[in-house]
Amino acid sequence: MPTVSMTVNGKPVSGEVEARTLLVQFLRDQLRLTGTHVGCDTSQCGACVVHVDGESAKSCTMLALQVDGAAITTIEGLANGETLHPMQEAFRNNHGLQCGFCTPGMVMSAIDLVKKNPKASETEIREWLEGNICRCTGYHNIVKSIQEAAGNMGG
Amino acid sequence: MHDFNYQKAGSVADAVSALNAADDGTVMAGGMTLLPTLKQRLAAPSDVIDLAGVSGLSGISVSGGVTIGAMTTHAAVSGSTDVKGTIPALADLAEGIGDPQVRNRGTIGGSVANNDPAADYPAACLALGATIKTDRREIAADDFFNGLFETALAEDEIITSVSFPSAEKAAYMKFPNPASRYALVGVFVAKTAAGVRVAVTGAGDSGVFRASSLEQALSSNFSASALDGITVSADDLMSDIHASAEYRAHLITTMAKRAVTAAG
Image (cartoon, rainbow over all chains, first blue to last red; front, top):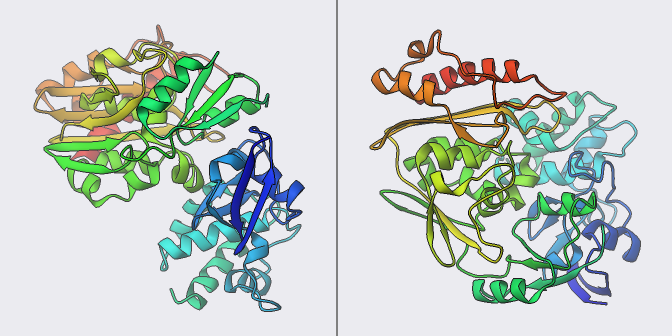
């Protein structure tokens, strides 16, 4: 089987995978990083969003072999010890989640937005979340969370 | 998904030889259509040849019009000041494809080569009179799109870039399917040195097409009111659970009017 190597949350990792192994399967099944979720498995819902070389991407629609040599960040790589990332903290402060299933993808997607558009308007935030589906919150508190985090991230 | 041999091509020539050597090989650009297709087992290629490592296939250059490398992502096109400055309608179109994560991975070359009947880029290519450059020739958009998922590309031919001539006026208006966000009807109108062209995606039984009745009306008077009372025949339009052919026909004129207004 082919071998794949990449950096995940700052640590070099490698493993044997089938060519058809998806990045999300490699992360969850081989690295046991189960914070990245599989919701729809059809690149609609965004529960599987991670960062690939700093850009948000749906890890259910990428092969592990495609990101050989890349730097991946997952939800597990955000907090600094006990200190949550400002985006995570803002989701907690604003009740930006209910069941929590979509939250890892929401947080990873939102961080990419704030990086690209630190002063995103409410409309821009809602448009950006096109590819992240939440079945609980109605998005209102998620948008509030992202607005608060943008302020705390220096936006 | 059935398993396959995964190969990372080092050059376009490498990719062509890998395709020719494979039993049933396929090229992967961003993978945003190919991977879902493989997951549903709608295709089971023996080899997937990834173009991501080939240098020189991405990037945007301006000279008269805009030339976009085949592996340029939708996000790169939508954020490009060169594209916004030359053909802003093209940047708007790219901004409306899928969602941000799909735009970070999906490419213009992949979209054009796949020729999905509801994809956005084929409408821009046809309306602007783009030229599709491959590893061996240049193909005019008029000769490129040959029906549902069919193109003029040979089995082992690879798109390297797409060139769009600049337009005096242009705009794209899409009525997205609320679930998939693909175009239920998308209309690209362009007024260029070559005249007025109107290309429609999402609606045609044989994929993207030019709406001649709308082009004629707009040629003498490029305004939304010129399209009052102009209809598009529902013959040869798609009819499915999302919309009837008649509904699509009506939407074509409506979206064309909006596009003409947006084009200014």
